[in-house]
Amino acid sequence: MTEATTVQMLAAGLFALAIIHTFSTKFFEQLAHRHPAHAGVFHLLGEVEVVFGFWAMVLIVAMGVLAGRADAIAYLDSRNFTEPMFVFAIMVIAGSRPILRFSLALVRMAASFIPLHQNVAFYFVTMALVPLLGSFITEPAAMTLAAMILRDKFFANGISNRLMYATIGTLFVNISIGGTLTPFAAPPVLMVAGTWGWDIWFMIATFGWKALIAVVFNGLVVTMVFRQELAALDTGAAKSSERMPMLMVVIHLLFLAGVVAFAHHPAVFMGLLLFFLGFVTAYKRYQDRLILREGLLVAFFLAGLVVLGGQQQWWLQPLLTGMDATTVYFGATALTAVTDNAALTYLGSLVQGLSPEFKYALVAGAVTGGGLTIIANAPNPAGFAILRGHFPDEAIHPVGLLLSALPPTLVAIVAFQVL
Image (cartoon, rainbow, N blue to C red):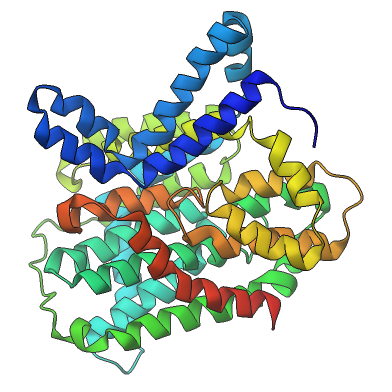
């Protein structure tokens, strides 16, 4: 391990503080009630999506003091913020009423072929098949759609606390592994696919079929465990009287496809987003409230992770490269819980001469652990922002998420390590 600079050690300390902060947001909410004069600040610090952005700002200010204003700005300019911008754009478009109506119709149609109670079949399709769409429409889009479908169909109808945590834990894991059928949809795969020459056939043969088994099995288990509660729900909400023209749906799908197609070109997809916002304004009667606030919070969270994570290479890379293939799988699974899984695989892509077994273990471990915490996988903050309003005190406890994600994570371990 190379000797760390003062800035790198400070960044590592702030990164650790940010992780502790994500587990302590309830404490700030309590402070807001005790000190109403400063409640606004404490509520802000109690927002999980604000945590990494806040500590990233602390880092940049500290860098300005220690290394100079020019170096701090140069570091910010060197960061790639494409992913936060893309997640924001895809959340806003995928969360629009025409896209959601279209997705609900597809889920309902697929559920009609399953010989189970309507609610049970609908839930299973959402948990088992929608995450697999992440391999084609990207994981953030699949997360947004799945979370909004679950929110409107189940969470809004007063499901139990146990079912809420089981759902979000399984959803996070399934989204993380469900994007591995292709080389372009899952952030940790995308980071290495070009460098290592992994095409779609390699992904299907090496990762995809295993992920398919694990995702369907996880979805089936959580569905069967809670089938009685799901069947007892009254989900017959009144339908909107406003008919959705097919042309409106097609136009929205074209916007979505355009953003996905140009996911690595922010000038293009942000331009499409601005055009989309103008189009939505022209046809307000076909829209619900766009999730702009949620999308901005998630983008701020991911941008903070990009800034803080960029200073962790000095200890992460030696730690990873010092492991053998088996150890790196479990090491990556564990490290993913406290870092972004795409950051781990990106570091691996920088190392020359890695064996095929090491490469597989690194990526498989990174996607396996992608559901354990909110910071483990880039789409997780999107699902978190959409669903948390229905949890007690509008907060998803990190320990509760971790415990609920462990069983489906173990299934993923068996799929990637035993099959």
